[in-house]
Length: 135
Image (cartoon, rainbow, N blue to C red):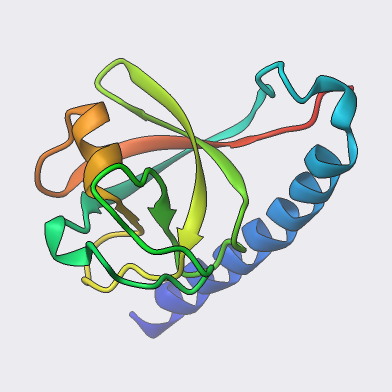
C-alpha cells in the first residue's frame, strides 16, 4: 500500500514540474492574453468544495477567500497554474490559489464559488487539464 502512495506522489511531483514549464510558457507569451489557451492532457481526480468555512482564510498563495473567489487548492501544483476543470458537461478555466486539500480522500479542493458554478456537491470525480500555451 505504501508503494502505491509513493508512486502517486512521484506522479504528482512530475505533474508539478510540467505545470511549472507550462506556466512559464503561458506567462511569457503575452500576445495571446485574450485567447483561451488549449487544454493539455486530461486527468481524473476527486474534488470537493472547501465550503463557506474557508471565507476570510488567507491562502498559501496570498489570496483571501471570499464568496466570489474562484480557484482550486492542490498539494503539488504551484500557485497560479491555470487549469481547466470539467464536471457534468461544464468547463471552467481556473487557477491554483492554495495548497491542500485539507480534507482527505480528494486531490482538489474547489472554492465554494467554483463548486457552485460547476454544480459540484459533495466529493465527485472531475476531469482536469493544464491550460497550455499557444504556439
